[in-house]
Image (cartoon, rainbow, N blue to C red; front, side, top):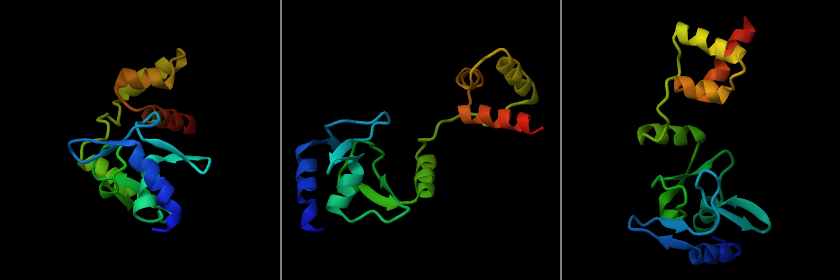
Length: 147
């Protein structure tokens, strides 16, 4: 890699702890999802993306940096690879990382959903009631509005 990444490599090496699985766990700030965050040249970016660029290569347009190890705070370049969002979702499904929620409601549940909505319940409250994602509730609301 070009010399311009030497400072990034040094910053990464100085701010990780290696765990028993060989993951380099980022020790500075994490975002709400547990990904390491780093400020490079005044710009905030995910630490695993910075590590990929510093140790491996530029990130191709339309690609994401994915973890083979499923550890979001890991920045070990040996655990990172480029892939599409579709690759990421396939990996998540295969590794059991996707939430296990019902995505369809029975006709009776749909009726209850609209009663709850009419009584002022939020999407979050309704989703919790039926054990589904808020997006599922939104889908039923949109279907109802389309009628």
